[in-house]
Length: 145
Image (cartoon, rainbow, N blue to C red; front, side, top):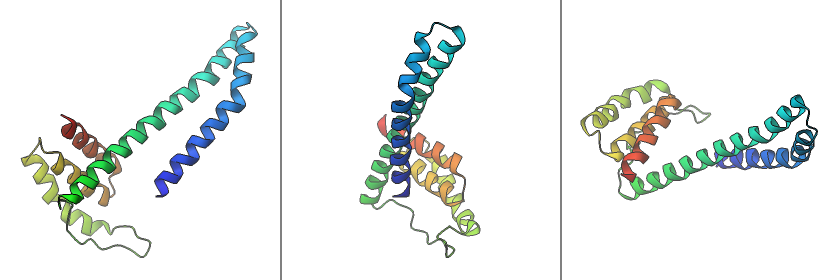
């Protein structure tokens, strides 16, 4: 839920930026001065990059959530109990102990999106967000194929 709130806030801020700066960008481009034109173009291009990033993250989040719901309905989510701190964060040693099972499963079944999704969950529990996202992206790609 907090990720959705973050996405809404970032999208609203980007929209506000576009509204507030868009007119200034057009005015800068209209001056004809090379430096001002460059600045105006930058003020237009940078938000477009931001929009692309937000759309990409929304698509990833939607696809990952869809796969998670599907795996849950099939009863295929990891079943290990991993201890958590009072803050709700996973105790890393417990997550690391459960990790080899999912790594070995993904290695043994490289074309199974379910194995890769579970590996992504294991990476996430172990605190390795970069590899978690990579594994889930692979799961999404495999499920679509």
